[in-house]
Length: 143
Image 1 (cartoon, rainbow, N blue to C red):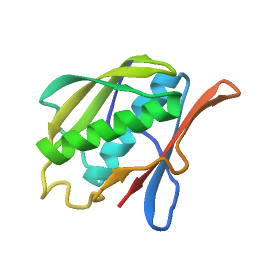
Image 2: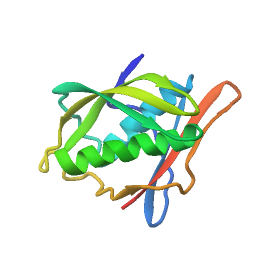
Image 3: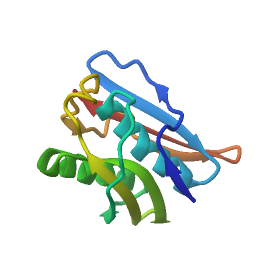
């Protein structure tokens, strides 16, 4: 399943940081929604014109750690190449790592001016858990 912007997410209302929580029918869907919630934060909710796909891998111990590692890699790509995900397809996601295909587009400082200035992906309140047949993912970003 390949998801595209916009996607629903819940603003956690954190005082000094910004956090998001998402839900999905599968762990893969929840991870893709976390990626797209991150993109929505960066762009102020404005769309991203996808210009190409890139395969991104991340590793960790536990699904929450893998999600943190993936978002840190995407934030690094934003900081160095000014690219933002507009689409995300999770190829693999387990307790040791993930592989995703992200449709990336250029960040536009004028169009995306209302976006958050994300500095880091934190461990604070990081979650990726299944309960009652629903996967819930949560991340907090330092601003």
